[in-house]
Amino acid sequence: MSNANSRARTAPAAVSSTLRGVAELLEAGLLPDRNRPALEAAAAGHAVGLTPEMAALIDPGDPNDPIGRQFLPTAAELDRRPEEEDDPIGDNPRSPLKGLVHRYPDRVLLKPLHTCPVYCRFCFRRESVGPAGAGTLSEAELAAAFAYIAARPQVFELIVSGGDPFMLSARRMAAIAGAAGAIAHIGVMRWHTRVPLVDPGRVNARLIAAIRRFPGAVYVAVHANHPREFTPEGCGALARLAEAGIVLLSQSVLLKGINDDADVLEDLMRAFIANRVNPYYLHHLDRAPGTAHFRVPPARGQALMRTVSARLGDLAQPTYVLDLPGGHGKVPLGPSPAAHPSTGSG
Image (tube, rainbow, N blue to C red; front, side):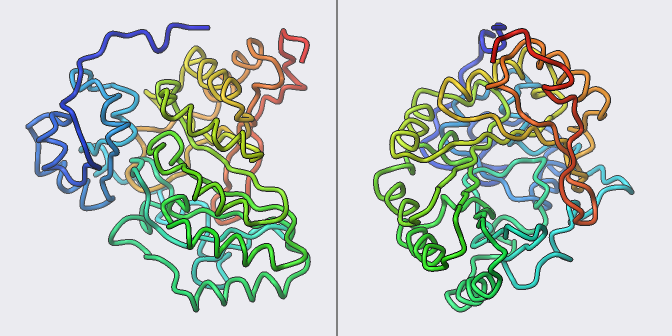
């Protein structure tokens, strides 16, 4: 285990509600009071949102703080490269209806809303999320989406994403879970979220009861990129989900200056499994606009995975994947655990 979490940090100003916009971040002392026009331009291009839980983790005296880098706007976002795309993984060509993506034969992605508790500066859906984004599906649009799914018996798994679906009310989450449960050929329901760690108070009995309305297997994929995100409150939210019988999976993105370090990745995967979250995917960064400063070359990612694979048992091994541009799906970048066995016994 490394000492990736041990650095002494300057405490930020106390924050009691989600910070939205450059002015609020400046008032909280989380952004430097310089180059404000560029920061405002970056915030205009992609929504800003920072929960008190994440704000409390940021060291305002460290410009390279790995939590701050994920959520605080910077002038680097204004650097758009020719290879970057508004829809880098090709959701739009695979979208038969508003809020629905059907890329693989046996599973469908439902995006019922485009609101998040925090807005990641590297987001591959940055063009559609936030207050000025694609909005929330109406009851009629949701009904049309479920009619599409019901008419396709090959669909076995429903993935609910967004935005962050854990930002929905418990009533709407229950309605979505119930509608999925009424379709006999849907056997698995998977929710993708950052809420358990970034806004853990939302994970309460009503939310858990809502997603458990689905009678089949329920999975929750939890997004985290750095071990410092695992606060006691966040770990408590994960425990509540696990103790309700919900299978937890991890999702992380390999990010320059945040987790492109073998010690940090090792600690991150250990934090997942210590909290009953099964390591699933480590994503190679998608080419969304203004994200070049986060990009790690694939060869470096593969070298990091080779090192991490040698340190961790197979239980803690994520699959390093790339979403091919154009909507062609995920491919593993390797190295796989089979090619680079761990030193553990399993």
